[in-house]
Amino acid sequence: MRTTRRSLAAEQNRTAYLFLLPWLIGFFMLTAGPMLGSLYLSLTEYKLLTPPTWIGLDNYIRIFTDDSTFTGSLWLTFKYVFISVPLRLVFALLVAMALNRGIRALGIYRTVYYVPSLLGGSVAIAIVWRQIFAGDGVVNDFLGWFGITAPSWISHPDYIIYTIITLSVWQFGSAMVIFLAGLKQIPADLYEASQIDGAGKLRQFFRITLPMLSPVIFFNLIMSIINSFQAFTPAFVIGDGRGGPLDATMFYTLYLYLKGFSFFDMGYAAALAWIMLIIIGLFTAIVFATSRYWVFYGDEKGGK
Amino acid sequence: MDITLRKAASRTLRHVLIIALGLLMIYPVVWLVSSSFKPNTLIFSEPGLWPKEVTLDNYINGWRGLQGVSFARFFSNSAIIAILCVLGNVVTCSLAAFAFARLRFKFSKFWFAMMLVTIMLPYHVTLVPQYIIFNELHWINTYYPLVLPKWLATDSFFILLMVQFIRGIPRELDESATIDGCGLKQTYARIILPLLVPALITTAIFSFIWSWDDFFSQMIYLSDIRLFTVQLGIRSLFDPTGQSDWGALLAMSTLSLVPITAIFLIFQRYFLEGIATTGLK
Image 1 (spheres, rainbow over the protein chains, first blue to last red):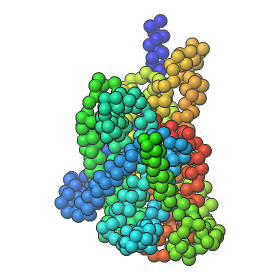
Image 2: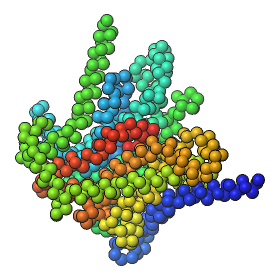
Image 3: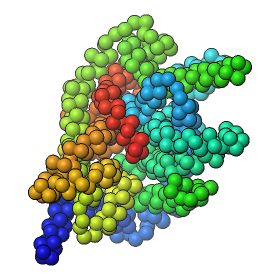
Image 4: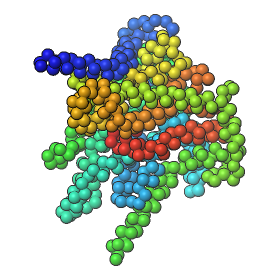
């Protein structure tokens, strides 16, 4: 009896690894292996045609002390992340709350608001954006009705970042759908009880809605930060593909791409990738670390 | 009476705001579609959405593509890649998810943790060595670099999605299957897979869209125009510095959104449920 049980366990073990085989191969060959590989390459000079030569920390030293494009692209990406992520989440929450208060044809509105998230990642929409924010584009036509003569948003280095941010905020629909599902989970008697206790709308929002939604907000925040750091297509298509005008669209990933696949300076690109990994890791860690002060799970007693 | 009036007024106002914002949201898409039917000279001079003069020339010109390769080719290339990616993700992610959700094996906690970590890993940190590997294998200008990773379950997001779904399936079903003489492989194929269909559809939909829109990888691995995808075709029609044939560009852009929109309309239910339960983008 015992031997059969043991052989059953062994069989289950074998079968499990069989099922996991594709994933394990992928994990070693395409994820873990290349990760270590890029760490090694980041310590070398490597131009694809000649074998890599070991240069220690030189790439990193050059990046941090002697590369103004790196600094510029890092700040630009920070600016993009720190403006677009909060705006997108706030919009998503406000619209979700407006839709949640019982509205006819909710399905249609939800669809309409979701469509931008569906299509927004394509080259096609980036091209549309470039056109409607152009000097003679629709946005300026609209501003013209109010007597405002606006510049060409996409050719001015100070403004082009904002057209890219609008494209990101425009895609608030997916976060909104998640919030909408979260709002439906909040028991109505919480609001009723607080109303009897004399709480106003604003107080209800801060004391009930926000805390009850905090796990969903937390999840959305992490995923939005990670994704926004990696934004590429909008910068590439709305800009000129080389970071211009005047490096105003030189997002971090675009710089990495140009270094690695335009100049084939692959050791340098690998170093840039590792710096990006560490920055994203740090931000995720910060959000996780602060989460115990502002994320409340339903099963906790008296989350306040 | 006064209170009900005020309530009605505020409800109407809310409704109007929601509709106005909805129109604003959908405007860029409508602009794209309407402009694609306007003659080139009218696209930028006529601000109205309803074209005064409708033409199909843009579609005819655009469809010709570039350098003798038509958009028919680009569309079929994109479709081939996307379908292979969908199949890969559905098969290999469901295999891995079954193991994680149902089977006992050594180091299962460790591998599960690794799987979770890879979800958050930025693609760029593995990009350079992956390129070198595929280059060594002479796979540049083939579809292997775009498709093979999906057959090795590297989109671990979908594994997590399916693990959570399988955990919701009652274990009694597995157990009664075992009593009836089903092995583990049969339990996977006959019990779990059929019940997993909603999660498989969600996976298939998002795999398709992500692959269709995956401009970055396509650009890195494909430079032969006969292998170009729709996204690469559109980007090549578009010249950021000089003059583009805007009509053709917008016509092909419109067409490029059709497959995704169609999938969305057909599978809407799975979409919204998938996003709401797992936070897919």
